[in-house]
Length: 332
Image: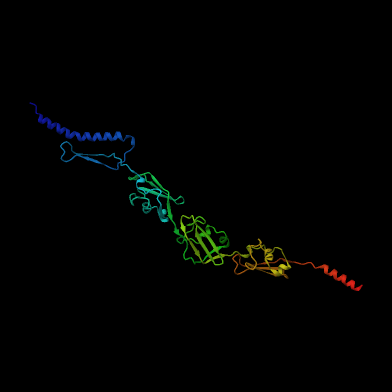
């Protein structure tokens, strides 16, 4: 009679040995077929299938090394893209974790640099979050469209104290340039004239006022400087050559008015008589001296003209003829 009991044991033994090998090769074959179209594997996870200790049919374990973890879309981590987000100027510059957290539903759920980068477009009030290539958590990018950069007070950019002496040229006080603004800033070019700040001068009070431009993305407010000196140009930069022949009337020599002054200036009216300059004549020596007034904001110094001619007045001949007629009439 055949020994079925021994054959049964042999069959059970073979099954327990061959089944794990069968499962291993079956799974490897399955993953190769299913994922063949997906390119190279990402060996990030190693799930393990292990037989139960008390199993009578399985033993040992199998490691699966070709498993891809599906990343979530970045929008699953971020707040709504139209939500108002306010960041500081420092955060715009640093683009650090604090800046990133302001856009996330949960602080720290993504790490700046490791999972995502952030860029700002302050002019368009936008911020773009983009997933880095090696992130294991997210994929894609998100654009926020209502981002406000919190402006710093203008005083954080300007020199202190505000009563320190600052000298500008007359040209700068009339037509300020970037170089003019830089004289008042801690760091040159940190603010741009007209785009970020404007500047006005009150030469009589020796003041300069810097005001943040309404559309500036960097600064807000205004600052007054109270010890500003406008460097006056030398008087001779405004007058004609001192050896040029200048002809004035006797009335102008007497009145010393604006008409008289204008004859000595390159541009009539560029200086105002008595306010900016006075004029004295020395008709004997054919000279005229123009002197800037102490309080003039336009010029300094003095100029002597050495070829000044006083226009002689014609004698009134009519009266003399009348007198002669009267004389002969009396004789007759």
